Length: 607
Image (cartoon, rainbow, N blue to C red):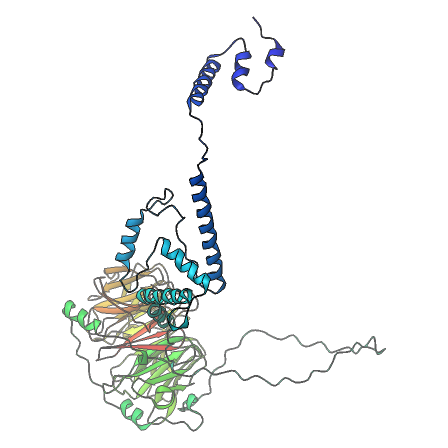
């Protein structure tokens, strides 16, 4: 039978009655009606709440109300004088019986006693009748011993307990330790001092006035001639340059102790072909870097480093980006902490060596196309070679250092005789390599030299050089990008170490010269130094035959030493080493490593 619409719109407050009004009930509606009936039965069976009408209870409630009001007043007075409020449980309910307290009072008290000593313990007391009496005495204003009220005595006692508790926590000692840790003393900078730029005097500029407002005719200015903005390379003056340190003033001279060390005869290093790696590792650990072994030697980025062979002290030379040459006596405090700065060139000093036969001679090569020889006995920088071409590297072609072989950035190789007075080359040959980065002569047979350049490394015979079309006697294959350097091993020359921009360090077997020199080891190494850092150049240790060192881009800053097999032997680190050191050089006979960074600083690791 259909349901009347009026029945469906029938509105009642009770949902139970509303469901009963519906004549046709679905199963869900029937289930809802049953649940409502059962709920109504349970509610009807509950006992009614009893109202408290006992007079004793009313009196106890009134007393509790009075006590709570008194505690609130005392708490307000304590806060007014700076005393922290003493929080206590509600009257008539101990902490043990408080249903809202999730942590039992007894366990909380035992843990508090275990955490703090007896002298620094904090006692939590439940208010009792004696407390109420003390409060009443405070209200009465009775005085205790020393003319202090009970409230003041209690306040002093709380202050002493708080002091004992904070002394137990040792807040002051921890604060002092953190302040000492955060207040790190800046390392003292040795070497060249920073020059403050002098401000030019400000000249008074006349106020510009409009000619139109002054009713004057404008004057046509002549059109300036078109200028050629191409940068022209400036060469240094020809002839010897006086060797005067620019950082010591016009009258500055080198001290006699420095000259004596500079003229010290060279002692040949004891190079060994095989070495006990475990013993050598222990000796490398002893090479450390101290704060006084770091100094700013040149003003700008370092391009080359050389170590003097003397053994009485450590003399180091460095060349920077703008033609400065810095000499540093590590154990001296004369001048700028033993640093002497010179300006023999106008472009980057990319290569320098001390002469093995004449240690007093320091030869430097620059991009400005000149090779100069620093002679401290004469106190001059003599001209050795000069050419209208960008030079990039050189090496000694003879044992006595009288003949040099130099390379240019356009692929030319020049043989220069220092004994000639013409300051020109004896022979010039054009190689197939586009850009020459390094030239290194074989340590045993001086007729052979290895050339590293853009994408290739080749070994040539100096006796077979021609003006054009010179062929190499051996080729080192496998390089996909520009090769930064290539060096023979220091004693036998049986190994060639290359550093390539394809992030590889390679070691080749050069015992026999053939068209394809075999590859012994290839080491994955990050050589991507970027634009503002000098390119990495891995160099051999001159006292060993099979170990070499190279800079690193890893953090913390370090210098890595590898074996020819590719295994990492040691990493040179230190608190004073905070930058990338691209150029490294060893002392010829001592356990001394010198590393230069791109801010002009040298780091000396000594054992």
